[in-house]
Length: 321
Ligand code: HEM
Ligand SMILES: *[C@@H]1O[C@H](CO)[C@@H](O)[C@H](O)[C@H]1NC(C)=O
Ligand SMILES: *[C@@H]1O[C@H](CO)[C@@H](O)[C@H](O)[C@H]1NC(C)=O
Ligand SMILES: *[C@@H]1O[C@H](CO)[C@@H](O)[C@H](O)[C@H]1NC(C)=O
Ligand SMILES: CC(=O)N[C@H]1CO[C@H](CO)[C@@H](O)[C@@H]1O
Image (cartoon, rainbow, N blue to C red; front, side):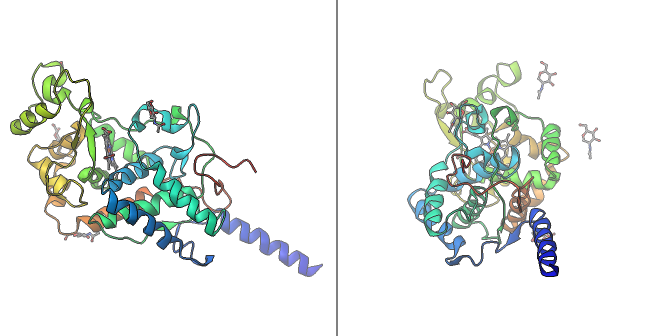
């Protein structure tokens, strides 16, 4: 009788602790026998990366879009007629197949142990490290969400004013400095011409280019983004051609030379609330460790842990049993 009571109390305690369980470095240690979950994820990301270095951009953007909408709960990955991935800002989010490949391997090794939400975060960390960033210690223990609605998607658009962007990041618990560091994600990857061509041809209804863009860059981009083109070409977000796929601080040096592609990227180098932060990052030797810390913070937004959420069997669908 007494023993049962103690067991029950212990169970309740364990449950309470688990349901409030915070994220942890090494969360999966020992949860899959002797199999090292992190090295399985790293191996798959590495084999993708050597074939296609743009996977770093794909995964970075995926982590941002997952974490900013309903928290880092892999809700972005759910299929469905009106799920998050069908909302316009996701257009061109890529890398879903990498997550699926990792999930398939992990489900074989140890079914229903590793969440899709954690796979996104760990895979992104690995890709960043392969692309020149730091291999930071990644916190895990997230669980997968069951809700994914396109109507929840209110990601910032590329012409958002700095003030509003600051507010959007603050709502997620991120400071102005975090915001400036995270926009450094644009040190890799591409943008479609349609998302900034107003800056080349008709800025704010003036019929002229954005005066905040370097005129040499305007001319070069006009060649790549002709006004009446039927194809929506892409250009590198980091205009330093030596490091367009490298995680480094050259993006900040570019925007200080008026060579930002998106309006928001250029704006943070000009606005007096962010420009000192931009210059200090542009001159820092430790951008990669600062960026890592900001990614860890972003990875902790509104996470489900403990008994909340679930561990999905397939990253594309909520469990049915
Ligand atoms: C105010 C915040 C942000 C805005 C308005 C924004 C906007 C955009 C836009 C418009 C694109 C181009 C998409 C396309 O043409 O296909 C893009 C690409 C990208 N964004 Fe952001 N972004 C923001 C923050 C972030 C953050 C926080 C990260 C990650 C830390 C990030 C990572 C990326 C990456 C890596 C790409 C390139 C994707 C690729 O090459 O496939 N962005 N972003
Ligand atoms: C855009 O134009 C409007 C008036 O047409 C003006 O009030 C506003 O300041 C302009 N914005 C920028 C960023 O130049
Ligand atoms: C930033 O600029 C605005 C006007 O553009 C000014 O009112 C404000 O005082 C400035 N803030 C700082 C911190 O310099
Ligand atoms: C980066 O360097 C700056 C100045 O040297 C320092 O204040 C800051 O703490 C460093 N940040 C990290 C994350 O190492
Ligand atoms: C992967 C995916 O579902 N992408 C969708 C993103 O949003 C655009 C526009 O709404 C859709 O056309 C894409 O299919």
